[in-house]
Image (cartoon, rainbow, N blue to C red; front, side, top):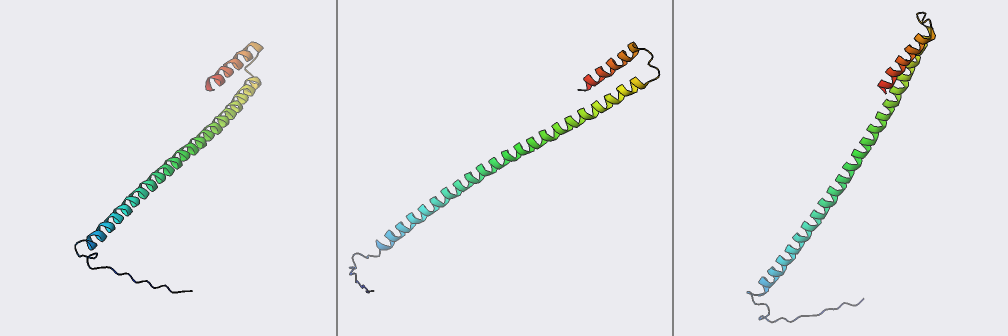
Length: 122
């Protein structure tokens, strides 16, 4: 490994007090301004990305909740229908077993009335 040492000769005219610090200050101010602009752009992009992600997650959550609610509603509908059929079946059995029903015409009338009630519930 070789050490390289190089000297620079700068005249006093090149380093006059009224230009060198002002040039350096101007350069530093421009660099600072550029860094601040980049920070703002990065922050805006992160905010937009976060907002997009949150919005997407929010929509997905609502979809899941809606799907879950629909599934629960459908399950309740099926359970209600099953229970209603069981009640109607029990009503039909009661009509058939009733001692007061003497002829077939009365039985038919009772069954039709029960059927209409069932259809009105559905």
